Length: 335
Ligand SMILES: NC(=O)c1ccc[n+]([C@@H]2O[C@H](COP(=O)([O-])OP(=O)(O)OC[C@H]3O[C@@H](n4cnc5c(N)ncnc54)[C@H](OP(=O)(O)O)[C@@H]3O)[C@@H](O)[C@H]2O)c1
Image 1: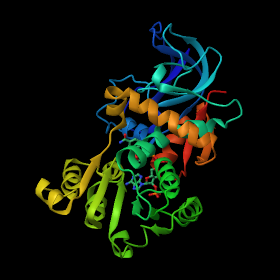
Image 2: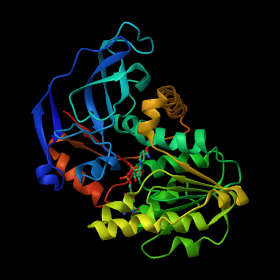
Image 3: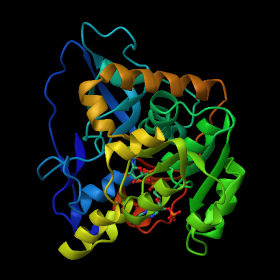
Image 4: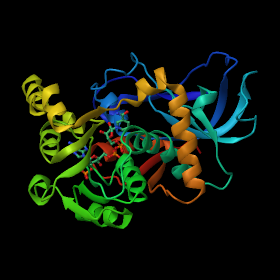
């Protein structure tokens, strides 16, 4: 069996090597999945650039999700059977032809459900579900801001918030992405390259979903009304910092906040790291996964697939995501 290994931080052209690897025998509560395709996430770009603390030591197999078929299951596994087509979470390790994961981390999917959409349901929709439905509980009539609304998580957040329903402001970096987010349910699309979202938005917000960090985070926080919630789940702008000084500036740009100020305005800061949830609350991860699979089956959410690429184009796919050329979910096929 083979997997793409991250062998060197930095440029896409020298980062990955396709190499043989072995997996240990599965445990009682685990499954072995023969992989059809794996999904791409922005965190993979951070890991490849050496900016992701949780990345295992090199050579490392990146990736958080695969679609495939159960090849073997442990004695205690009840939710899936050998031969089932599944979506599988991995804690790294999904850029591979076979993955092992716990029974909590797999959900059965229909034979005809498109592979790319299934890949989107894992990390991106589960993160959005945890953020908008478990942790924040967006309420009818809320005014919500979603940064990077054309990305995978942004697409999912928009669909999950819209069903409440609420008013959504969303940012994106091109006119093509603006059209896309409008069609996906954003009421007020903002091209942040042309307009400052902090000036365009003229009413106080109930919830801000921020995956950009730095100054964008600080500006979003200032827009919150009394009782408002800041949901921080990423720091994409960290990739723009090229040296220690710009990194320090990026960190300082978040601003300094006191608990007293949160108390006085009844505001909340909700910070999300799904790896920690997977490590310490695997039951919650399982809940998010089964919930989004059900919502997809009922047609309430509908992931957008920006592209499925052959595995030989992995480096080019990384390049596209880093350069913000993608919309929605991007996946990689083994065959
Ligand atoms: N905390 C967690 O557990 C967790 C889980 C999943 C994802 N995340 C985070 O959520 C964010 C979205 O993830 P995703 O997989 O949905 O990503 P994605 O599909 O690649 O979308 C990311 C988008 O962010 C926008 N962006 C704005 N400023 C950026 C910058 N400085 N550098 C790069 N991109 C920038 C780009 O769209 P525009 O062209 O519109 O700018 C880009 O396409 C990432 O920050 C990721 O790390 C966190």
